[in-house]
Amino acid sequence: MTMAASAVAASAALFAAPAAQAAWEPAKPVEFIVPAGTGGGADQMARLIQGIVVKHNLMKQPLVVVNKSGGAGAEGFLDVKNAKGDPHKIVVTLSNLFTTPMATGVPFNWRDMTPVSMMALDNFVLWVNAETPYQSAKQYLDAVKAGGPSKFKMGGTGSKQEDQILTVGLEKATGGKFIYVPFKGGGEVAVQLVGKHIDSSVNNPIEAVAQWRAGQLRPLCVFDDKRMPYPGKITDKQSWQDIPTCKEAGVPTDYTMLRGIFMPPGVSKEQVDYYTALLKKVRETPEWKDYMEKGAFNQTSMEGEQFSAWLGKAEQNHRELMKEAGFLAK
Image (cartoon, rainbow, N blue to C red; front, side, top):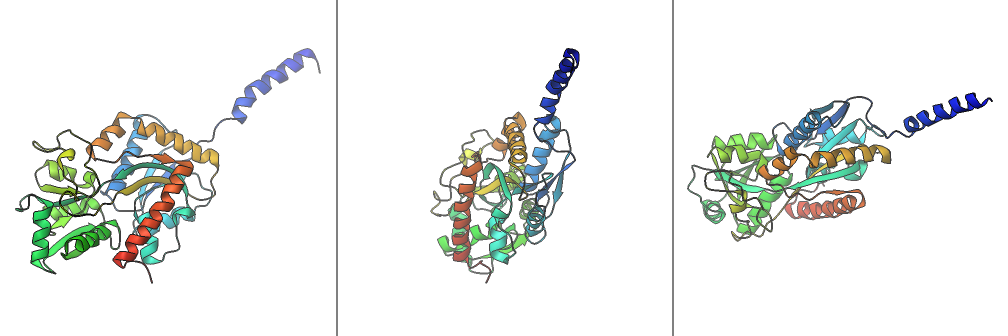
């Protein structure tokens, strides 16, 4: 080979090397599955992430949100489970990741997917219609206890899911009794409470903040061991930080919900790394930070082995809660 030919070959190799080592990225549109109905917390988060990705040009391919809420989310989870090795499909999770298989016996477990990132933990708030006389959780729960069975309706998302688990926890802590009324999503629950078709809800903050701001709903307490750390006023008088914990109201019940992203099983580390990096960029945007504050999220985030270890503990905690509530599939 002549010296000139050798130089050409070396030059070609130099330019070819980066292409061969280029990091993986999606080659076609990515389906972003929401295993819940429209308008709820998971749906809102997925569509926010989609909007941030578009606005900041974080992906070359489109991110397409698809709601698959059938079977309390089983439809969406089984779709991801069965898409083995497909890196063009991701799913946003909520607590039905644990509760749906436990309650129904559907052949699915979080280990059937690939954990990518915990985006945040979501709080739960006890809400009533603003036109009711109840100014505190104690006042409302005392009324529920005094009213007896079949008088007060608690609205929630799905049956034998996190909202009903919390409702059962309230019943056991207070001695009161609710009629639990399931709906398809948290957005619908808030609308039903505004319309006085139910007496209360345990919606996530983001699912009822618009109605609170409009003076239609009233928050009574947050189901966490500490108040939400957001001092900015949502209404003329109150901030998230002003809402007492349910423990302060004498109700020792607390519960937070996972908002995480998973991929199908059998994907490569390089593909997981792509979405991990993408979601880290999402969390760094002002839109995400504003959403976290407005929705009063617990901004804990995890990845890798730490996230998997957390998932194992959360699964066991849900199993104990479901067993106590009598919700485990026979």
